Length: 117
Length: 109
Image (cartoon, rainbow over all chains, first blue to last red):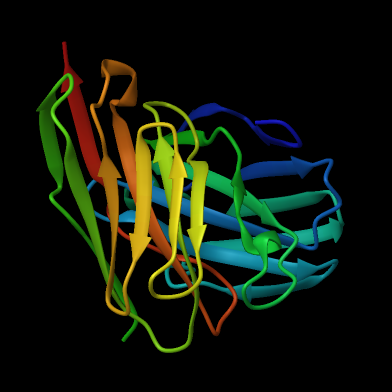
Protein backbone atom coordinates (compact mmCIF):
# COMPACT_ATOMS: atom_id res chain seq x y z
CA UNK A 1 0.00 0.00 0.00
CA UNK A 2 2.38 2.60 -1.28
CA UNK A 3 1.95 6.04 0.28
CA UNK A 4 -0.30 5.08 3.17
CA UNK A 5 0.54 3.17 6.32
CA UNK A 6 -1.55 2.21 9.32
CA UNK A 7 -0.36 1.39 12.82
CA UNK A 8 -0.69 -0.76 14.72
CA UNK A 9 -1.70 -3.52 12.33
CA UNK A 10 -3.04 -5.69 15.13
CA UNK A 11 -4.14 -4.79 18.64
CA UNK A 12 -5.89 -6.61 21.44
CA UNK A 13 -7.22 -4.50 24.27
CA UNK A 14 -9.66 -4.67 27.15
CA UNK A 15 -13.07 -3.06 27.44
CA UNK A 16 -12.88 0.47 28.79
CA UNK A 17 -9.32 1.22 27.70
CA UNK A 18 -8.45 4.02 25.26
CA UNK A 19 -7.10 3.08 21.84
CA UNK A 20 -5.54 5.21 19.13
CA UNK A 21 -5.00 4.09 15.57
CA UNK A 22 -2.71 6.04 13.30
CA UNK A 23 -2.83 6.63 9.57
CA UNK A 24 0.16 8.19 7.83
CA UNK A 25 0.31 9.24 4.17
CA UNK A 26 3.12 10.45 1.97
CA UNK A 27 0.91 11.52 -0.97
CA UNK A 28 -0.02 14.98 0.37
CA UNK A 29 -3.70 14.25 -0.32
CA UNK A 30 -6.24 16.60 1.18
CA UNK A 31 -8.87 14.03 2.15
CA UNK A 32 -8.41 11.22 4.67
CA UNK A 33 -11.01 8.74 5.88
CA UNK A 34 -11.53 6.11 8.53
CA UNK A 35 -13.78 3.15 7.69
CA UNK A 36 -14.61 0.04 9.66
CA UNK A 37 -15.33 -3.29 8.01
CA UNK A 38 -17.49 -5.95 9.64
CA UNK A 39 -19.03 -9.15 8.28
CA UNK A 40 -22.51 -8.46 6.98
CA UNK A 41 -22.03 -4.69 7.00
CA UNK A 42 -19.32 -3.95 4.53
CA UNK A 43 -17.26 -0.79 4.78
CA UNK A 44 -18.83 1.98 6.84
CA UNK A 45 -17.49 5.49 7.22
CA UNK A 46 -16.56 6.58 10.74
CA UNK A 47 -15.02 10.03 10.26
CA UNK A 48 -13.24 11.90 7.54
CA UNK A 49 -11.00 14.92 7.19
CA UNK A 50 -10.86 17.50 4.42
CA UNK A 51 -7.83 19.35 5.71
CA UNK A 52 -5.71 20.05 8.76
CA UNK A 53 -8.02 20.44 11.76
CA UNK A 54 -11.07 19.99 9.48
CA UNK A 55 -13.02 16.85 10.24
CA UNK A 56 -16.59 15.60 10.03
CA UNK A 57 -18.66 12.62 11.10
CA UNK A 58 -19.62 9.60 9.06
CA UNK A 59 -22.48 7.19 9.53
CA UNK A 60 -21.00 5.27 12.51
CA UNK A 61 -19.14 7.96 14.46
CA UNK A 62 -20.51 7.31 17.96
CA UNK A 63 -17.73 6.29 20.34
CA UNK A 64 -14.96 7.56 18.06
CA UNK A 65 -13.04 10.80 17.75
CA UNK A 66 -10.42 11.91 15.25
CA UNK A 67 -7.68 14.47 14.95
CA UNK A 68 -5.59 15.81 12.12
CA UNK A 69 -2.83 18.18 13.17
CA UNK A 70 -0.68 17.59 10.08
CA UNK A 71 -1.59 16.84 6.46
CA UNK A 72 0.11 13.46 6.63
CA UNK A 73 -1.41 12.08 9.85
CA UNK A 74 -4.99 11.18 10.75
CA UNK A 75 -5.63 9.64 14.16
CA UNK A 76 -8.67 7.62 15.21
CA UNK A 77 -9.31 7.38 18.96
CA UNK A 78 -11.63 5.12 20.86
CA UNK A 79 -11.91 6.90 24.21
CA UNK A 80 -13.26 3.82 26.01
CA UNK A 81 -13.23 0.73 23.83
CA UNK A 82 -16.23 -1.61 23.79
CA UNK A 83 -16.63 -5.12 22.39
CA UNK A 84 -18.85 -3.73 19.62
CA UNK A 85 -15.81 -1.84 18.33
CA UNK A 86 -13.99 -5.07 17.56
CA UNK A 87 -13.45 -4.69 13.82
CA UNK A 88 -10.98 -4.12 11.04
CA UNK A 89 -10.29 -0.43 10.55
CA UNK A 90 -9.19 0.97 7.21
CA UNK A 91 -7.74 4.35 6.49
CA UNK A 92 -8.12 5.79 2.99
CA UNK A 93 -6.88 8.88 1.19
CA UNK A 94 -8.14 10.85 -1.78
CA UNK A 95 -7.15 13.96 -3.68
CA UNK A 96 -10.85 14.57 -4.45
CA UNK A 97 -11.06 17.38 -6.96
CA UNK A 98 -14.72 17.42 -7.86
CA UNK A 99 -17.25 15.49 -9.89
CA UNK A 100 -16.11 13.05 -12.54
CA UNK A 101 -12.52 13.34 -11.45
CA UNK A 102 -10.21 10.39 -11.28
CA UNK A 103 -8.77 12.06 -8.21
CA UNK A 104 -11.86 10.94 -6.29
CA UNK A 105 -10.52 7.39 -6.15
CA UNK A 106 -9.83 6.21 -2.61
CA UNK A 107 -6.55 4.49 -1.87
CA UNK A 108 -6.71 2.25 1.16
CA UNK A 109 -4.23 1.23 3.76
CA UNK A 110 -3.65 -2.40 4.76
CA UNK A 111 -5.98 -2.20 7.76
CA UNK A 112 -5.73 -2.40 11.55
CA UNK A 113 -7.39 -5.35 13.23
CA UNK A 114 -8.69 -4.40 16.68
CA UNK A 115 -10.01 -6.90 19.18
CA UNK A 116 -11.71 -5.61 22.34
CA UNK A 117 -12.07 -8.27 25.04
CA UNK B 1 -31.74 7.16 1.45
CA UNK B 2 -28.67 6.44 -0.65
CA UNK B 3 -28.09 2.73 -0.96
CA UNK B 4 -25.81 0.25 -2.71
CA UNK B 5 -26.75 -3.43 -3.02
CA UNK B 6 -24.50 -6.13 -4.40
CA UNK B 7 -25.55 -9.59 -5.54
CA UNK B 8 -24.93 -12.40 -5.16
CA UNK B 9 -23.22 -12.36 -1.76
CA UNK B 10 -21.07 -15.30 -2.80
CA UNK B 11 -20.32 -16.91 -6.15
CA UNK B 12 -18.49 -20.13 -6.89
CA UNK B 13 -17.21 -20.71 -10.41
CA UNK B 14 -15.14 -23.27 -12.19
CA UNK B 15 -12.06 -22.02 -13.97
CA UNK B 16 -13.15 -20.72 -17.37
CA UNK B 17 -16.81 -20.34 -16.39
CA UNK B 18 -17.80 -16.74 -17.15
CA UNK B 19 -20.30 -14.85 -15.01
CA UNK B 20 -21.36 -11.40 -13.80
CA UNK B 21 -21.60 -9.60 -10.48
CA UNK B 22 -24.30 -7.01 -9.93
CA UNK B 23 -24.29 -3.67 -8.11
CA UNK B 24 -27.57 -1.80 -7.94
CA UNK B 25 -27.77 1.68 -6.47
CA UNK B 26 -30.22 4.36 -5.46
CA UNK B 27 -28.27 7.57 -5.16
CA UNK B 28 -29.13 11.18 -5.77
CA UNK B 29 -26.49 13.00 -7.75
CA UNK B 30 -24.24 10.12 -8.80
CA UNK B 31 -20.71 11.39 -9.41
CA UNK B 32 -19.10 8.06 -10.15
CA UNK B 33 -19.28 4.32 -9.48
CA UNK B 34 -16.20 2.45 -8.34
CA UNK B 35 -15.22 -1.21 -8.32
CA UNK B 36 -12.61 -2.51 -5.91
CA UNK B 37 -11.04 -5.89 -5.34
CA UNK B 38 -10.18 -7.04 -1.82
CA UNK B 39 -8.00 -10.02 -0.97
CA UNK B 40 -8.17 -11.61 2.50
CA UNK B 41 -6.29 -9.59 5.10
CA UNK B 42 -5.67 -6.66 2.77
CA UNK B 43 -7.20 -3.31 1.96
CA UNK B 44 -9.43 -2.79 -1.08
CA UNK B 45 -7.60 -2.23 -4.34
CA UNK B 46 -9.03 0.05 -7.00
CA UNK B 47 -10.18 -1.52 -10.28
CA UNK B 48 -12.45 0.85 -12.23
CA UNK B 49 -14.39 4.08 -12.15
CA UNK B 50 -17.49 4.62 -14.31
CA UNK B 51 -19.08 8.04 -14.63
CA UNK B 52 -22.05 7.82 -16.98
CA UNK B 53 -24.62 5.32 -18.24
CA UNK B 54 -23.33 3.32 -21.17
CA UNK B 55 -19.71 3.59 -20.14
CA UNK B 56 -17.56 0.44 -20.09
CA UNK B 57 -14.07 -0.26 -18.73
CA UNK B 58 -11.93 -3.37 -19.21
CA UNK B 59 -8.92 -4.84 -17.47
CA UNK B 60 -7.69 -8.31 -18.36
CA UNK B 61 -10.61 -10.69 -17.72
CA UNK B 62 -12.79 -8.03 -16.09
CA UNK B 63 -15.24 -5.65 -17.73
CA UNK B 64 -17.38 -3.16 -15.86
CA UNK B 65 -20.54 -1.59 -17.30
CA UNK B 66 -22.92 1.06 -16.01
CA UNK B 67 -26.61 1.84 -16.47
CA UNK B 68 -28.72 4.44 -14.69
CA UNK B 69 -29.58 2.01 -11.90
CA UNK B 70 -26.90 -0.65 -11.79
CA UNK B 71 -23.44 -1.76 -12.72
CA UNK B 72 -22.17 -5.17 -13.74
CA UNK B 73 -18.72 -6.63 -13.35
CA UNK B 74 -18.33 -9.29 -16.01
CA UNK B 75 -15.66 -11.91 -15.48
CA UNK B 76 -14.65 -13.78 -18.62
CA UNK B 77 -12.92 -17.16 -18.33
CA UNK B 78 -11.92 -16.62 -14.69
CA UNK B 79 -8.81 -18.13 -13.14
CA UNK B 80 -8.24 -19.13 -9.51
CA UNK B 81 -6.24 -15.94 -8.96
CA UNK B 82 -9.43 -13.95 -9.61
CA UNK B 83 -10.79 -15.27 -6.31
CA UNK B 84 -11.42 -12.28 -4.04
CA UNK B 85 -14.18 -10.08 -2.69
CA UNK B 86 -15.36 -7.47 -5.16
CA UNK B 87 -16.71 -4.23 -3.74
CA UNK B 88 -18.87 -1.65 -5.44
CA UNK B 89 -19.04 1.94 -4.21
CA UNK B 90 -20.78 5.12 -5.33
CA UNK B 91 -19.61 8.69 -5.11
CA UNK B 92 -22.43 11.18 -4.72
CA UNK B 93 -22.96 14.80 -3.86
CA UNK B 94 -21.40 14.42 -0.45
CA UNK B 95 -17.92 13.70 0.66
CA UNK B 96 -17.37 9.98 0.95
CA UNK B 97 -18.04 6.82 -0.98
CA UNK B 98 -20.89 4.50 0.01
CA UNK B 99 -19.91 0.84 -0.28
CA UNK B 100 -21.96 -2.25 -0.92
CA UNK B 101 -21.35 -5.36 1.19
CA UNK B 102 -19.42 -7.08 -1.55
CA UNK B 103 -19.51 -10.30 -3.54
CA UNK B 104 -17.05 -13.03 -2.58
CA UNK B 105 -15.89 -14.88 -5.67
CA UNK B 106 -14.27 -18.31 -5.51
CA UNK B 107 -12.81 -19.81 -8.67
CA UNK B 108 -11.71 -23.42 -8.55
CA UNK B 109 -9.44 -25.19 -11.00
